[in-house]
Amino acid sequence: MKDLAKYFVLLAAALLLFPSTAEAQKRGAKKKTAKTEYNSEAELAKAKELFDAYAFDEAVEQLETAIEKGKKAEADVSKEEALLQKAQIGAEMLPGTERVVFIDSTVVDSKDVLGVMRLSPECGKLAALAVIVKNAAWARELAPAPAYVNQFGDKLLLAYPDSDGVKRIASSFKLGDGWTTPKHLDGMSGVKGEQNFPYLLADGVTLYFAKADEEGLGGYDLFITRYDTQTKAFLKAENMGFPFNSPANDYFCVIDETLGIGYLASDRNQPQGKVCIYRFIPNSTRDTYQLTDKNAVQVRRAARIASLAESQKGQTAQIDAAFNRLRKSMATDATSRTAKIHRFIINDDIVYTSLAEFKSPNARLIASDLAQIQAQIKNQQELLENLRMQWGAGNHSEQLKQSIEELAYRMFQAQKKVNNMAKNMRKAELGQDK
Image (tube, rainbow, N blue to C red; front, side, top):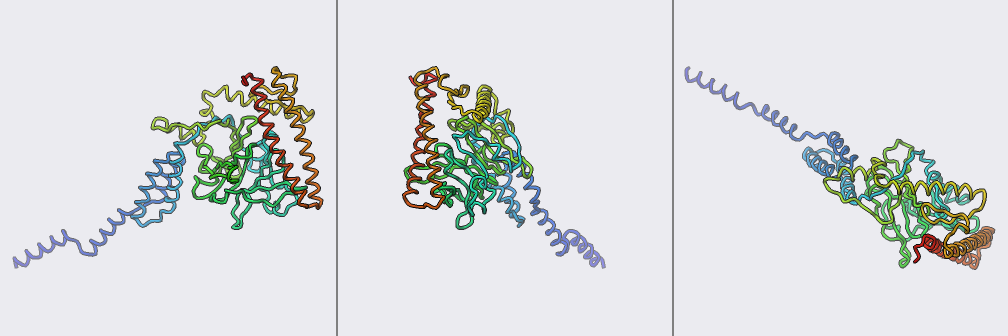
């Protein structure tokens, strides 16, 4: 009996030390569940906070750790992977953040964006397509698309669907009272994603536009490309980087070279239906920050335009000159509407409205020739309009078409000559031609 009692005591002790198989499995399952538990929403929230602060390297590190944990838990990490791709793009762009002086900003309804970005006549204009092209079926289908018209009023740039329905930048030319069917720009077909919101500098070479695809930071990103006169096609487009781009939609980058003022249209930090128009001073050459651990916060703030005042430090004279140009332009434009006064822009602070104001005889002579050539261009413009009216009336002869194209080309060349003369005039008046 003693041996039997001893056996039961030992058995009871063994059961306490070694639980049943079912209990062991249950405890193991709990332990395993605790090990592989993964909260996707919490991980994404932490990464998004870093991403929105432009702390892209930290966001990448956090997301890579989260994705590894999520995969071990056999969780869906597709959202984390998508954000990781954006964070990696941001991390690559941040060291190239450009120093830009922003002079002011205004928030408007999205429908009013084109009206806010007023350009000098020499820079063409932005307008709704329906305002420019009134009698073409292809234009009605695209309304209310934005479009750019050059300074001569005979070339139009817009986003036009290709055979797959993807919008790409295209050009249309004025013939008679109408416009030709848009043709996609050579060299732009290789650019991935939807393209929109074009703006062409007065040089006819430099093109700004926006595109949206998975390779960008989010929404539309702004790009720049240039026309190669040798290949007769646009070169590979380059992302404009920070601060022009953001994870939101960045629509327009517009440079008024006459006034030395740029416009950036973006819906970053804006509610639905609103767009912020930033005015800035364009750089003659690209000037970027040198990103270090010490200035990382400063560069991140500059990249996301966290403060206009921070971009203006030490730039008081430059900003005052920009506002003076804007004020004089507005005043001169108002005067020109009532009296046809010629404007001779000398520098940021000097704008003449008559030859008598010139101090340099050489500059006055150039200005006189300049005014005559501009008058000739105006006459040619009237002739061109007459030829186009003939085309619109039904005369579609090859000879008329060739005459229109040749005259338009001569006017383009004449405008280039005018631009060079204007530069020489300014140098002579300021004593810089010696």
